Image 1 (tube, helix red, strand yellow):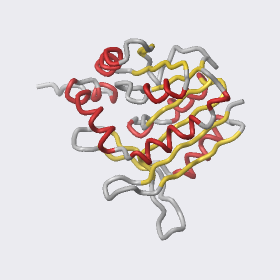
Image 2 (tube, one colour):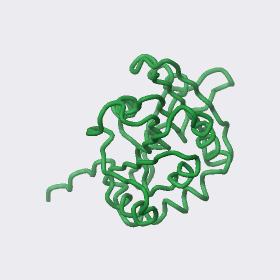
Image 3 (tube, one colour):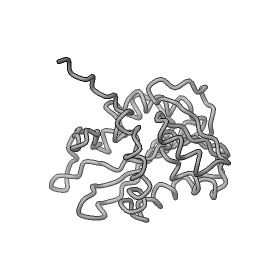
Image 4 (cartoon, one colour):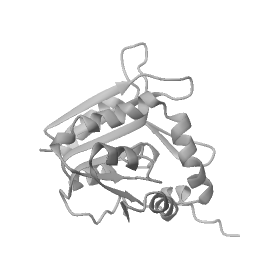
Length: 214
């Protein structure tokens, strides 16, 4: 009997069971300090722009915060199930279907492009990172919820990929190596990394990376 083809990464997320658990997961797993780390970095730069693209917006859980901050918000995601919930819960906002690996969005089309814990669940992060930078006009803000932790307080282990029992990618980033990749591949004006230490016994370090394009 022929084996069923392996699901592409985004298809793992495109199920009612996953969608139903995301809102609870975000509110219960992500600490207020973790959310504020991400939101605060974007809020601090609000005077630099007005349009914001949330790439990998999922069910739109970050949309209310960005609207409160005063952004003209657009959310994009690859999964129909996620977009259906986002459009249902936030009918006044714009949500589009796009793929980080093959996005049709024009260059420099949004002042800010943000990505919240998306790269950590992808089998490759270079092409998606290039897409985020291409579409942004001024800044890219990337949050990563999985970072490798210093050994002996001296050095970070290299990037590594694991998969959970459901098959989802868990990509752990060496934050220093990630900053080097950003500089070598994108050549931005600047990159600023804000690292938050472990907040509980189950999650690792978190980080927000602010990439200035102009």
